[in-house]
Amino acid sequence: MKHRILAALAAACIGGSGLLPAQNRDFKPDKEIVFKQFEKDPLELNIFLPEGWSAGDKRAAIVFFFGGGWVGGSPAQFYPHSRYFSSRGMVAVSAQYRTRSSHGTSPFECIADGKSAIRWIRQHAGELGIDPNRVAAGGGSAGGHVAAAAGVLDGLDEEGEDLAVSSMPNALALFNPVIDTTEKGYGAEKLGSRSVEASPAHHVRPGLPPAIVFHGTADSTVPYENVERFAAAMKKAGNRCELIPFAGRPHGFFNYSRSRISYTGAVWHADRFLASLGYLDGEPTVGRPGDPTW
Picture (cartoon, rainbow, N blue to C red):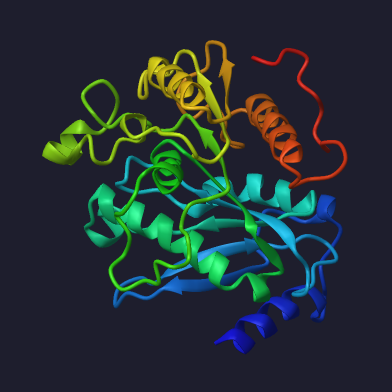
């Protein structure tokens, strides 16, 4: 398996056409690899490789999870973000996970799949050319919940996986995330009696990954109060957590297809956050926001 993955990734970089300069490539992934098998619709990682990539690299990585209320959605939502961060030198991944519409699952299977994706990436760091100690996770809305759950919640792993390999990301970049799944936030009706169990806001403790959160102050789906409370709890516990408010922006403001201005602002701040952790070098290749809150 290891040699097949290595050969596939190498072909993506040194094959017939090779990698074009980042600014000339569209948002199509460089490679798609199955990381979790199911009889119906196995799950894939959509991988974006930086120019000059080789399997011997020790690059930082980021994996994104799409939004859709744990009901639907597509990894393509984060293809623009993934291509940007691969252009900056990271290995970027937009992951599939099971949803109610695709596999008839609950939010708990979404969490398990997110943890599986992070664990798989670490297990295959040698073929992916990444540093297993610099794996960030991000996502939007329910996908932000998947990423945050991997970073905050203990347990809820897929049965039979090697738990000696950590599924906790080393950093979090969350885009209007579902962070409180009780009646004070979003999703309580889908989780029933287990709503607190799945709520990152209720499980903050010392020693969690550094995080940055982007949220519209006019979000009517996930209340802005939720992320304010989460950020305050993270800081009180001694964790790093930056909250970037986007004034007057609604839910989903960060999507490339919805608002290039808000997309660019969020990407710029995420770039600076990841650079501060040593995941990126140099300056962002998108313009600096004139107003940090946009």
